[in-house]
Length: 112
Image (tube, rainbow, N blue to C red):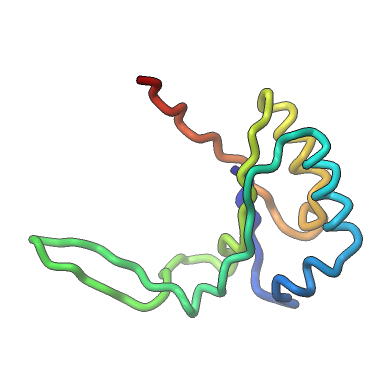
């Protein structure tokens, strides 16, 4: 999973991202590798809700309360041969020039 972080400055929506030729070229490249499964832009942290269960009670609070300006702004779920391929794909993502991209592997699914 590529987690694309942002600080919210110059935030644009899905339609603007889809209109960027460099992003569409990146998607075509990833698709040609057979690596892309899913991805999306996330709504801003101000629209988030955090849920915790304590002593059997569901507690809800508005937004995340991170001590940072950066937040996960979107993600791409990819199936890659190895970490090197994931790094190669992440390094060509259009956001990589302005925002950190964290690569986070999934635990393998247990087979029945």
